Amino acid sequence: MHLGVSESMRECEYSQISTRSSTPMETPYKKRTPKKRKWEIFPGRNKFYCDGRIMMAKQTGVFYLTLILILVTCGLFFSFDCPFLAQQLTPVIPVIGGVLFLFVLGTLLRTSFSDPGVLPRASPDEAADLERQIDVANGGTGYRPPPRTKEVVINGQTVKLKYCFTCKIFRPPRASHCSLCDNCVERFDHHCPWVGNCVGRRNYRFFYMFILSLSFLTIFIFAFVITHIILSSHQNGFLSALKNSPASVLEVVVCFFSVWSIVGLSGFHTYLISSNQTTNEDIKGSWSSKRGKDNYNPYSYGNIFTNCCAALCGPLPPSLIDRRGFVEADVPQLAPPTNGITIYGSTQSQQSHTSTADMKTLRVVVLASLLLILQLSSQMARGHVSTASPASTIKSSTIKSSTVSPSTIKSSTIKSSTVSHSTASTVKSSTLSASTLSTMTAASTVKSSTVKAVSATAS
Amino acid sequence: MAETHSLQDMRQQAAITAKVFIQRDYSSGTMCQFQTKFPSELENRIDKQQFEETVRALNNMYAEAEKLGSQSYIEGCLACLTAYTVFLCMETHYEKVLKKIAKYIQEQNDKIYAPRGLLLTDPIERGLRVVSYNFVSIQTEQIEHFSVLFFLIRAHSR
Image (tube, rainbow over all chains, first blue to last red; front, side, top):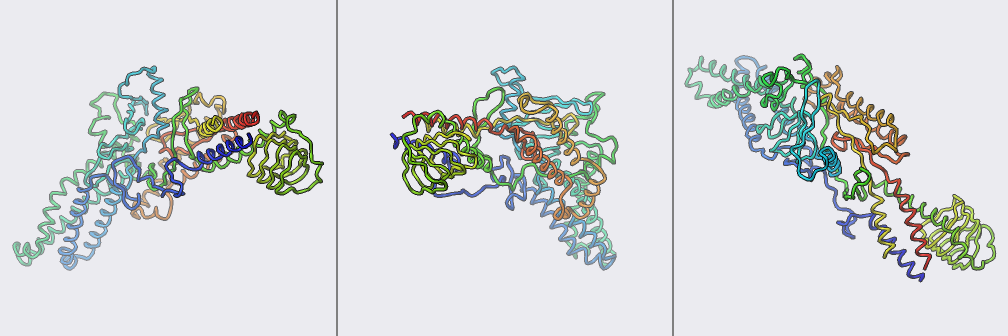
């Protein structure tokens, strides 16, 4: 009978340890699986480089084309036209050209590599909570309701917030889901294939700086290459000037076609910034007066200067997706909701929490056993070993039916004994089976013991 | 074994935490603000005033982070001039405020919510979508208490 009890105890213990310590996936010989960073399990269609520091869209071919065009054109300019211009006019020209080129490159890389303001997808418990709220609002009907929208009044204008079925969130105002990157992006402007990334809240200013500086650079190169050809043709004649520097011809062609598109784009975005709109809103005509007399942009600050400052010099919010953070082993389990609260289980989501829980468990066990002793003490007492002297240490002994008082019991098996009035007694590594520990003071500690049917009274 | 099975179930149930989510409030635009409406699930745990005070404090701090003032403009212009390399040395204003918010939440948890069995999570961990209150397992101690008693009685009855 005793053996049966001890076996069940051991089984209990082993199962307790297994639920606390490891996930089902872990194998016994491998203590830890290598920790993954969050970018490795990112659900969107993005590419990550440099261990999560760089983030781009999936299709990056056109970005490389942009980069090559800029590098080649500027390279040709600096090698073929600048020596002539530096000599004939002033060496300041290559310097300004160099500064512009570096600025263009910097802003391009910053636009392409940074997080545009991606909204992380809702965790399963949040998504379920939202679903529950929507069901309650709809009256709990079984059929799938129409696309979910929420209406909000911002600055006097009614704005509809749409529910994103992919990200399982209600999109904030001005956010949009990019179908190419499969992410919701805050203050979504557009997806630019030339920079190989979405343009959103976090990289809009870099994008604007890029196109502005690129338009200056394009005009600069165009102007000075033309100057070079003109000056050179004054000396040698037009055709020989062209023959001497064929690179200039290529540069002129590239710049000529770029100027129209890039300068046009800069002008368009300057207008958007000054009226605080996104490309998305402008194309849809969300705030145009054609929609209605009372239609106005609720996000505009009123004057152009404030709008520009807000877009370009406002605070830069941090990335919400935490690409380089480590994934925590959090395994959510669903339980049926009770009392309107959605309950979700998780194993080892908070490591420190479980260790304090272990301590609490031990304390609870001791208290529980102390309580039961009162009830079971009548069955327990079967004679005593005469009162052992205080501060006696009983080591590695089998004490049957004994009364031990202020003593330390170490590595002993105490069966059917009464341990009473032990103040500050420590019971270490002992198996106490069917024993009575009465009136143990609070200072008593039960360490690493297997307590079998122990009943103890709380002091 | 009946005892082991029930104990294991209770162990797993002990890890379950209930969560209450407080959604964003978009009535002032795209600024990060949270709804101050008191959720019914927290009724018997904390006062309405306490809850509103916490959420309002958080809202104020987020407003401070996103404020367009002279400080943010100076920081923006300086960053632009140095080609944003200045952020290798110093933190942005927003990041500084986020640290302040984390400290405030920690403090609120220690002083007010942990004694009542609640845990306030930092919204930045959830992408600034929600503020969540987790019901910490005060119930689990009771469950374990009773399970141990149950086990002891069973074992003893043999």
